[in-house]
Structure formats: structure tokens, C-alpha cells
Length: 150
Image 1 (cartoon, rainbow, N blue to C red):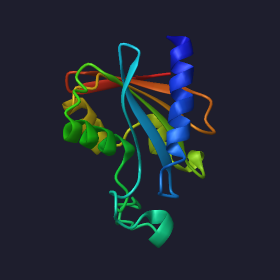
Image 2 (image 1 turned 30 degrees about the vertical axis):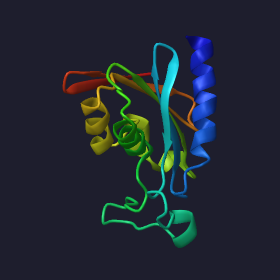
Image 3 (image 1 turned 90 degrees about the vertical axis):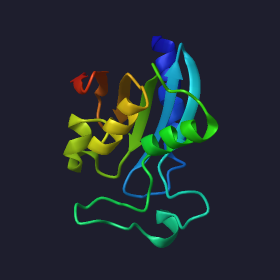
């Protein structure tokens, strides 16, 4: 699995470069039985203005709400195309301009809303690499709780 994992991380890093929000570019993929089920990256919905074209739309919590999160795109496309994510793993690669300023990413690879979404979709674990931070973070979802390992 180690060789597969490194290959998946490289693919997610490439996917992240497709992200259209300059605040963070994130590429994700769902894996099951060493097969890629689906991929996603962050950005506004198709055919809508993208952050890199018209700027970010930031809420009071300093969160861009124009861009759909990569995890949301992954789950949304799975639903749209009839692909079950039940029992799969999610791998994510994040490119952020200043990773040390995003303490949340270091503690939890996915935001609270995306964590709920991927757990509901049946994803059983998430592995996240943030560019500029040496550790790889692994979150295992157990029932409605999760634990993060390094």
C-alpha cells in the first residue's frame, strides 16, 4: 500500500492545482480496494464565476463561500454519477499559501461540515497531506467520532 499511497498523494497534488480558490487548493480522491473511485478539487460550481476570476466571497468566519470544498465536490459527483463511497478511504492534498496560519488544517484535515458529509457518505478514513508540513495526518471515522493519528 505504501507505493500506492505515494502515487495517490502525487495525483492529489496534481488535482489540487486545478482548484480555483487562491486561499487554498485541495485535491481529493476516494480509494477502495486500491482503486480510484472518484476525484475532486475545490472551486465554484461548473459554469459559475471562479475565485481566481472574480475574487473570493468571504463570510464573517474568514471562510470563502464561493468555492465548493473538494470533499463536497467528491461526494456530490459520487451522488450525481451513482458511485457508492461506502467503505472507501479519502486522500487529500492541500496547497495553502501559508500553512502555519491555518491551525485548523493541522488539527483536523477536513472542516467540520465536510467531516460530517464524508462520514455520511460512508467514507471510513481520510488521509491528508498539507504542503509545507512534514506530517501526514490520518483520521479514522468510527461511528460518529473520529481520531487523528500522525
